[in-house]
Image (cartoon, rainbow, N blue to C red; front, side, top):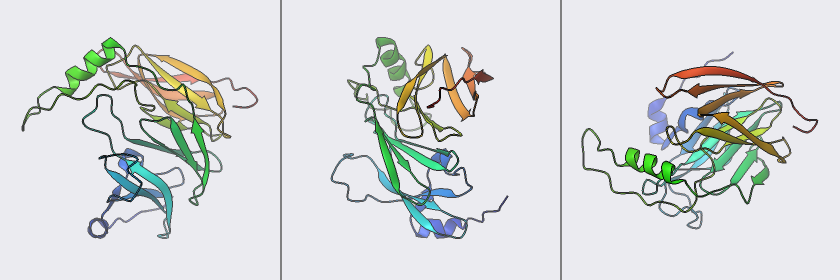
Length: 237
C-alpha cells in the first residue's frame, strides 16, 4: 500500500493532467498526459494529442507513447484507451480508429504492436440511427451540435483490458445503446490472435483471471448486472 500526494497547481504549471479514468496503473504508478501538440507528422489531423508519461512514486518519468483525443466531428469517434496488468506488468495503448495496439513495458520500452487488418467493419443502419440520435441531442446550454460525419468503418476499440497473464482484450462493439451484443478480440501475451468472445448486450470487461472473466452487463433499463464467466484457456492463451 502507498499514498500519493498530488500537487494540482504544479501539474497545471507544467501543463499536465491525468490521462482519463485509467490513470492509475496496475503497479500503483500514475499515467499523466503532457498537454500540447507534439510534432507527429500530421498523423491525427486536428485531433488533440498529448504525450503519455508513467510517473512512479519516486517521481521518475517514463514515456508511453501518445494519448489522442476523439474527433468530435465524426460519428462513433473514440480516442485512446489504456489498460495495464499482467505479471510482469505491461501497459497496452490503442489509438483509434486504426487497429494498432501498442504494448509497452513499465520502463517505457515498446515491446510490440498488435495489428488486425480485418478488425474494422461498416456500421449498421441501426447503429447509425442510434448514434446520430444521441449526437444530435441539444445540450442544456449552448448552441445545437453540428451534424457529425458518418464514417465508412467503425473505429477499432471501445474498451481495453489486460489479463493476469498479460493477454490483451480489445472491446470492439460501439457505445452504449447501439448494439445487441459486445465483441472482444483476445490476444495472448506475445500478441497472437486467439479468437473472438461474444457477450449478450452491452458488456464491460473489468478483470481477466486465470480461469474467469469478471464484468458487468447493462439491461434494457441501463441497470448494471455483475457477471462472472468461466474461462477455459488453451495452452497458448
